Length: 258
Image (cartoon, rainbow, N blue to C red):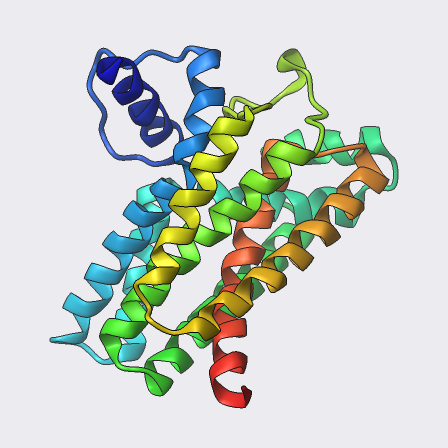
């Protein structure tokens, strides 16, 4: 039982990050679906490592450079998995006007103008948001906020997996792996992993990011359903990225004006 659960966890680690995993971990589709329960926990790892590097770099470098380097570390850990999905969604929905065209463009490995512009603006907004938070809070608090943002943004994608329909067939999908369904038990487990980091900030105002994330999820669910009938792996990546940015922006607004 413990070995099976470890296999599921390492499956999540293998698919959602570039962190080396034991050689006995296979690519079973059933394990990938079950591994979704650990998706927010992967956010703990990516956010925690990014936060650690932010804190470490800040000891010897200006905070602005430290923020950029911590972002680089996070991207390297995931292999730009979610950023790539966001860029593909920008290209697909920016250049396609039918379901078939949108899906074809998103599957294309060539990055277009919409994707380039979209990812540049996204990363710039992330950098400016995190940099601003370092001016508003002490560095350890910002580090905790990074863990929260990575965990809760992935929880937002989990909400979409649980409620919405996956629209690609295996033979039409990219090489990217993607979980297509999850049980109620896995959904609850994933939400526990997502919400636990909120407790460690010791401020009830952090809970105000939850309705913001619900709005992000509802908006994208409706938008994707309208145009392609559901979600793809790229769509989940886009939701994660927008949700992460929304958390940084929400924290800034909540603590400044509430």
